[in-house]
Image (cartoon, rainbow, N blue to C red; front, top):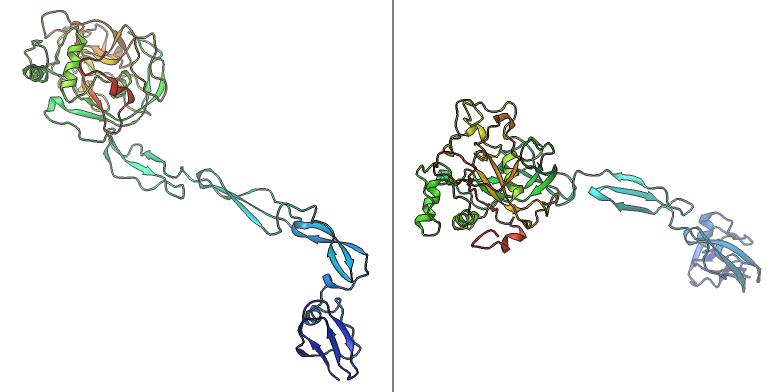
Length: 433
């Protein structure tokens, strides 16, 4: 004999009808469904899951004794109290003693350089210890760097950091300075000094005055390859801007004399340029990191045949044409930074100090004008010529332009477009001070 059941969920009661059928009241739907249960069968929540599902009953709605209480689980491994009311279990308190997460949950945290770590929620609703998920990348997204050794020192190849924190492919070598570099006429050629760090100063102080050692970053700039020649200065005189200073040999450095404003006037006329700063001059002479030498050359110094100076037997203090000392060319390709005339730089004074690491400040105020280079008139051997030397005062006061007598030459510089310093806008047009 078969039984009839009603497919429904909720609280149901089984009643034996006179017809021999089993009726289920309070189950919601009244749609009859065939069942294998016979008259007298007891359908309880302890039956198989299939049987319990079929009759729509589960443990949470099992009949209970009114007034009784029980503790059941709730969200995040918490517990709550239930009370039996009218045969039904109802919540009697909030869910308490909860954990911090749901079992199986996962949390991922991003770290620097695209790294990440992951943790999962345990069966007891507690987070596990963090575990590395993705290792750190090579760089910060958007970071750009120069590729060392890929190009000449005047050019750069760069790499950009990708979204995955990996260095991209290097670019082709290109000038390290924005804008156009002057290349003509040859004695007016400019040299690009790309942005970057260099090692500045010299603790030894072999002669003159030098700065304490430090690593300094400078933005890109252009500097004259050669000291200003008599030929170039004559153009400024002919234009009615510069004062007459004589000078017959057009290829030799011009000697403007004691008046610094004469040199400044020329640089302003010649493309609205300026003197190099103290740091710029030294970087152009000694090169970028990792080079730290305080000399123009690597290895053995030039011979007296290559650099005929007053320190060489049988040689006088002859001031040579600017192209005649290739042995004294810097690693950037700048000529005669030593072995010729000393050159005025923007900075003044030793009292107020110099630029700190990585920063280029306004030229400090002081009573002394700083000069760099020179050496042709010194009796020191070439092996003792250092680009870190700093001097003050002194000027050519003789009448023979061929002889070096402590004269001051001119070398101009300018910031590359986009690399201008804040203090440049305050430099006067008529003079550096």
